[in-house]
Image (tube, rainbow, N blue to C red):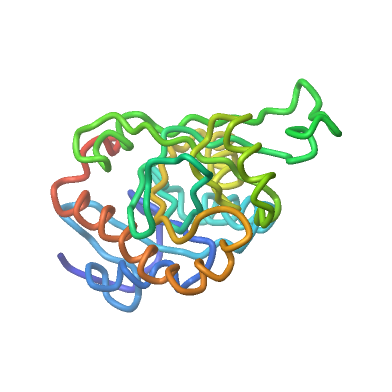
Length: 227
C-alpha cells in the first residue's frame, strides 16, 4: 500500500457520519485517509450526522470525487429479536426509510416517495466474505428510545438494524448511479438503554466495521466495479 494526500477522482469512497467512525481506516491508509490499496484508490470522508446532513454531504462528495463505488461505514443498533450482538460488524442487504408515525398508523408516506434502496449485491457479497448479506437496515430520523416502539419498528418493517444515515447515503448514490454498500458495527440495542450503550461501544463497533472494509480491500476488493 502506498499513500498520498493528492486529491482527485477515486475508485472507492468510504463515507461515515463523522470523523471518529473512520479512525479504523488509518492503519491501512494513514492519517490522510487516502491511498492506494492493491490497485484501488481509496478516499475516506465524513458526510454529517443524520439523514439530511448525510444526504447533502454524500451528494457533495460524489460530485467532487466521482467514485466508482461507495461504502458507508458506521454504527447501528439492533431491534429486539435480531440475531446480532454488540461488537458484530454487519454487511447490509438493503436500507429502508422508516417513519415511526407510519408504523403506528398515525402517518403515511406518499406513494411516489422511494423508501428502499438495495445495496450493490456484488460489493456486499465481497464484503461479507463471499456470502450473501442478510441484514436490512432501517433509517429513522431520530434515535428510537422507547422499547415498545423499537419492537414495533423491527417487526413492522422487517429490519434488524437502526441507523440514522444509511438511506440518505444510499439514495444519493442511487440518484448518481454509483454502486453503494454499507458495513455497520453494532453498538447498542435499540430502545431505552441504547444511547448509553452507544456511548460505551461506538468506537470499538466502528473499528470492527472498518476492519471488514480493510480486509476486503487487502484481499482484492471482490465485487468492486471495474473502471
